[in-house]
Length: 134
Image (cartoon, rainbow, N blue to C red; front, side):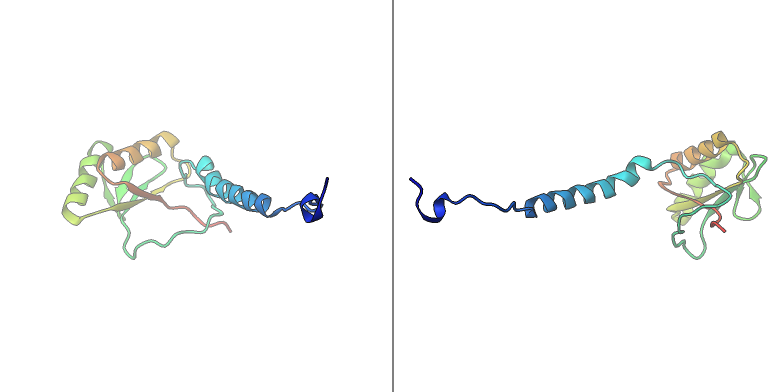
């Protein structure tokens, strides 16, 4: 026997928990999607990403189209001396980050080798310099 309000069934569905779960899933997907797509930045002719702020006097290693490595504007560093050169800079000047500027025609293998040498020298923060999209 049904008595009063206890026996009435709910005719409306409460969607608040559903919305809460969907928002949490949306946030999780928004955070993890860039991590899945992350890869090695390469020097493209144009990049659509907005640049980050760099220090006023950044430390730059450049690789020209012939594969020659330069520190700063004009100091050429042989590949076999790059790791010791960067390690000495880290030790003497407290260098913590380096920016890599590679010509778009440089072989991917050369860029990766330079990055590996910088990492082996103890520098964990390595940025890539690209041109903004026009």
